[in-house]
Length: 127
Image 1 (cartoon, rainbow, N blue to C red):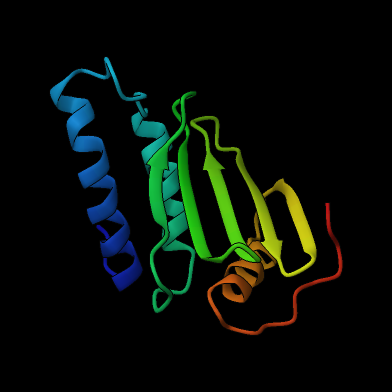
Image 2: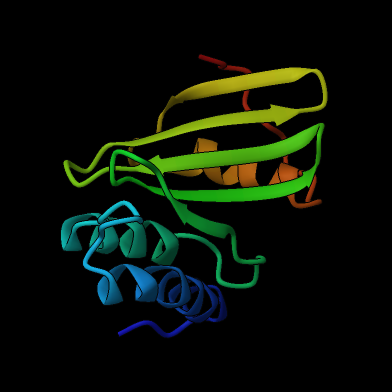
């Protein structure tokens, strides 16, 4: 059961976005599998619950996209797939990051916090 503020906001956004897909049986909106939804929920549950919720959308291949956007120089986007893979791209000032998010998620957590206005030390490794 979702408990934290971030989780509740994420679930609300996800429900609002996916509701039309159920009504029209995914004819005009990409279908998202239950596995993908569950992986996205677990990813959100692993984040600090006091941060702002991401924008939620789906991609043409059925992935769930999560995006935190501060401005054109501070943005991070995740694509979550039913096979458990989570890919990310981030722009933080002049730095660019991309890769596959793997446990532990500390590196991507730091990137998210940097995008939304916190100032953790972002690790040096970039993909």
